[in-house]
Amino acid sequence: MQRKMLKKMAFLVAVFATAVTAMTLPPAYSQPQATGPLPEALEKIVTSKQSTIKQALDHLSGSEWAGNYSLQDGPTAGTQFSWAPNVGFIVRWSTCSHGWRETVNYGAAILQNGVLRVTPELSGRGDNVYPIAKDLVPVLWGEQHYLIWSDRLTSFCYAVKNAANAPEVAAFFIKDGDRDKRRNRLASVPVEYRKYLFAKPIIASISDVKPNPKPWIQELTLNAGIYDGVVPEMKFYAYATNNIYLLVEVSDVGEHTSRAYVITSGHRKYSEKEVRPRIGWKLTSRAPKDASNYFPG
Image 1 (tube, rainbow, N blue to C red):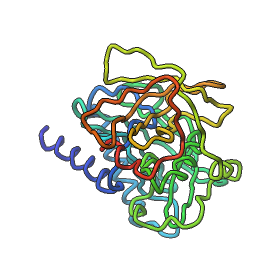
Image 2 (image 1 turned 135 degrees about the vertical axis):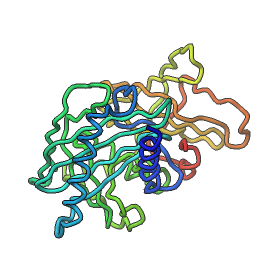
Image 3 (image 1 turned 60 degrees about the vertical axis):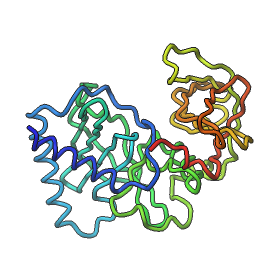
């Protein structure tokens, strides 16, 4: 049992070792509340499928998009996605926070008409099931290969715009070995999403601060929503302030308002000072130059 746990810990370390420096992000792609490691029977199936995909990739040539990908879901969580033509895919999320917990899914995968269509064999939202409801879109950014869930393309575009100042793109699948490659030129997102790469920053104001008995949880309402271009997982930062930093993430979006929660906040000059958001404060979707300094990690 101990040997198996050590192997799992080594897996998570491998995921993090491929990530950019500074930078672990808050949960971006919602996962069910996994209660523990994979059951033994499921672990055997997953191990077998991982081995089959690895063997296929070891002997594969001429397939630019097949391979192993990884992303970060949080300070102690990561996800790996592997796929090979005619073999299928496997996706595995894991965290060591509050004990070792995992979710997984696997099934068929076919790259067709610019979309990686995945058909999962595990359905529902069980304790150890990684939920899949969308396909993946291959996006080339310079020499880097990304696989983006089709419902996260807008969020990816916003992350690309902030890449020079914040590690938001670490929350999206990137091919192993590509992190240090060049990102020259624009990311090759589908035509209908390119407008987001040139969009002006969204400015929003805090319209409500929700009381919470747990002081470390700060939930906000913003006066910007779908019609303003806001999407779930979008990051906002304190606007036009020299001393206060604030990083929030959008959780739910309505037509003209959105709900968000505070990831980090503080005072640049006086680290011991507590900063709590107030109604009327302005936020922007454009990351400031020092944004990477206050991402958790």
